Length: 245
Image (cartoon, rainbow, N blue to C red; front, side, top):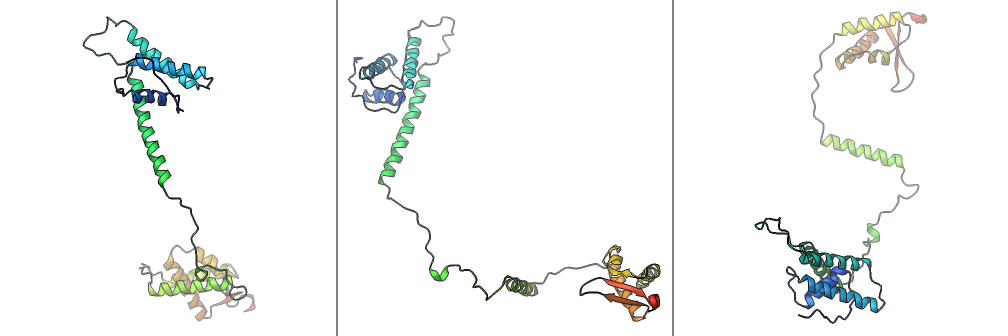
């Protein structure tokens, strides 16, 4: 086949695109490229581009140097020191792999381009909500945040009654007499004793229960006075007879 090739100078996307065009137009086996022929045609193409004063990207000249390097490797004499049984690597292999990969990606790109062309035009739209289903702010003056919180607490309590928590507590009884003695010692040492402070010194639940029962027993026997300044506040213990009481 003659090296003279008539080119129509189409727009190529790069040197690999040009090489692939040369190979396909002449029905050349991509795995057995006649490197001398392709190199000559490639350089002829670049020369025509220069004659037309077209802007040539640098990557085209890089490819031309690669083709000339591969061509020169075929022209060099064989190395006599290489074992004949060991096959030499084909200098075209790297270029062939690049062309195969480029061909695959080009076909994939053309496929998606065609699919995009035939796809129907779609536009996103926010979901439409009927006025009856829209969430509106609470009307002013009809309900407060505290009322909402209280309603939530009531609902939680009802749910807890329907599904009560089941647990077992192992309580070791603490003798009340021991706690009675403890409270008497505290009252005798200090005229005004804080029940909360005494409770903090208890080691476990059984001791605390014993302390509270001892408090009730001393009140029953009128051995101490108990005062409370506010609801759920601390209890203050005073012995009978102290401060004139």
